[in-house]
Length: 310
Image (cartoon, rainbow, N blue to C red; front, side, top):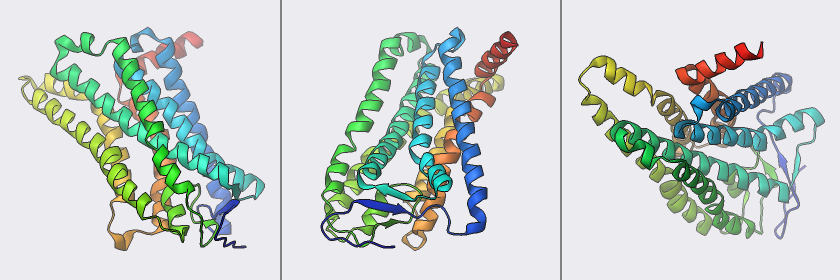
């Protein structure tokens, strides 16, 4: 069934991850497993940060925000896949679709900003350790985290205003597993030049490239500072304190660059679904694993809580 409407549209049909019937059950249980692991891992990290006093530090405060963000991002996207497989209903209303798109895009922007704030935290800790307590005080951390959330939600409003002005769609079938910006733009038969210009200028440079450059600059100074440490053990120990964050940064930006900065010959909706699935499913479930396995303080707190519980 395909609906073409040149004035308005009431619903979209989500095509999903694959059309192969034999893979439907496998994908359902795989997505369900990933979603449950995401919830479990991030909830454990968040509760540890709240309950354990040795984790009441700026870096873990931002990590707690990142855990909330990963849970929210996975829920807003993966729940539709699970609902589609469970009910067989792949129809999503226009308001729900726009709401999903807004929150997913906002969460992605907030995550980039949070990772930038965490890179600044690592910069101050390594390059200016004597001023760390004064610069990264609790009030500054709360303000910085709040700024990330507020900016992330506000900066998507112009996109939504332009997107809601689209009045003509060639089809209501979205070749994706959730409502994302580019698949919907590709369905439009209206003039989307203003929206595409906004995506290219603000979306690429302000929301993506700017946080990336700020993070890169922070790590350039961090690396220069580490290189000035005389002992090799001191250099390894100092670099280890930011290795978890660096791993997450490389993982997320690598996925986003592969998704949005590929050659046009490789730019297909099916390939976008693969990178989007990795971004919405794999990254949120890997974040708590990376921060727990590569962080001795988190592992110590987890072991203590486990021993006390039993």
